[in-house]
Image 1 (cartoon, rainbow, N blue to C red):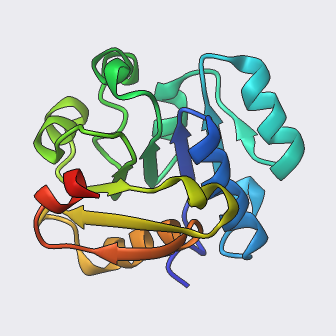
Image 2: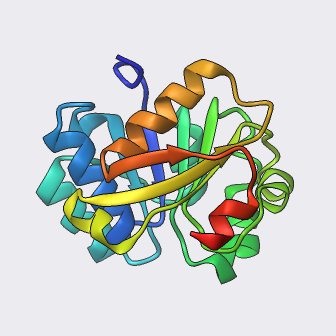
Length: 171
């Protein structure tokens, strides 16, 4: 299984991050102890700890340093601030998965110092595991990490990989 030995950090623990965590745990793709949640609202992180037995991180940088897969699930307008807080901690990640609306792959790769970026656009039914997520990856993302992206996004419902980033904006 592509996620069996991976730790996944969620930078941002809102509705979509919870939907993905819930899907991953309930589908048996990972256990809660393979997930690390970071969010500026500590009480939100503690909700996820209680519901899914995930680990809480004191900071975005700590979460990213402890994981092989980093999921960026914040508001798009705070990416620069979040990247600054991470202090390059995502540079070592084997995969960075972004669900930020409208933020281009190049921007993500530059901000986080990592070329292994998958950009995805889940839709609202993803919250109940019935979504359709359109995604794309940089040419730097190896096939094993593409498989991980498929598994992560499959936890939200159906996933569709496209070759050109412009299709995400259409989605």
